[in-house]
Image (cartoon, rainbow, N blue to C red; front, side, top):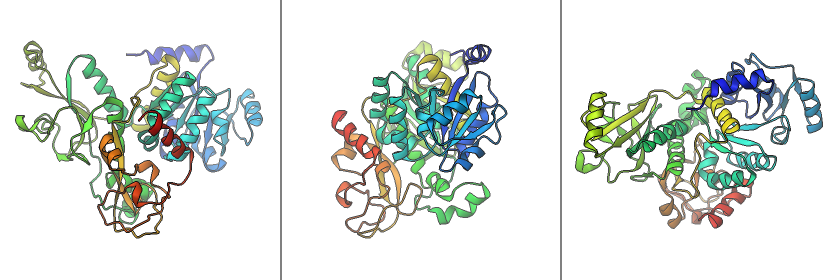
Length: 428
């Protein structure tokens, strides 16, 4: 276990705190800024949002914030930094290019913006903490490659469910257990036809954007998260969309196991999610070593041969500063994709679509995300979820139909599309 606490104290005492830029000062970004304000040895140097006013507001609950100055140029920002001030801006380049920033946190949620931010940050030798999992499942492998070429770290964010699952996965595989299932609990009801209108009242009660809540309820976010886990571990989905079985924590090791042993799976080594388990993430693991099985009985883990490892919380953005520390202090990620995609987050029509319609964004009215093995998605020309926004439908599409490249006009240009094309050619 890394000595984050002591290392950060040493940075504080040396007057050399880790300097962080946060891009996206919404709910998650503001929590990151606020949490860093509670810590020693780390400070937020730059906050970026669509408007400078929103960026300034992101500092509002942080205890350690210096005087905040709105800046529009890098020269202006550098002078403000040297005067001991914190920066608010609407220009991401003041975060990715500043010599007063060690790591950049992307909390934007935009695949295109995530691609642009990451590439600029790598060029200027900044570590990138990617809270934008939609971007990761689309172009994560090529971003990781560019990060390594630049000598910096590209990482998923601690506290988010993918990183929490990967933490358990590393623990189990290091000990030699076989991972049968890696999964998460579904925190919201599942309604694959959810849209911003159906979620508006609940979203207002929870002070959320209706589209963001819809992304959770319609299953898109779960598909994105488990695709990220798949791409980081090599585990696959057992069936398209995953099983989404109902289970309690105690039932996980009886449900998410092979059919021949009384479970629902056709194979071992899969990603899935459980309805009825929340919050938290889990692994179902196994061993055929009788001595280890006896030891697991002694530790109240059950008779085996299947065992549940359960983390009953994930603190989302509150944990993200630990990934920043891991990148800067140890040159390691909390989680990152392998060299090639294992799973694709695909796009499925949420309602009947007409030729000529332009697709909206994730959590909207047109489509939802699901998960499929990358080899299958590639063979069937399935449209990646992260590329769907702004595409124009070229033929009528019935509800529940997976959308393919053949059903749309050309994908609109953008840095994310450019990188995806490179990834498809270079990494296969």
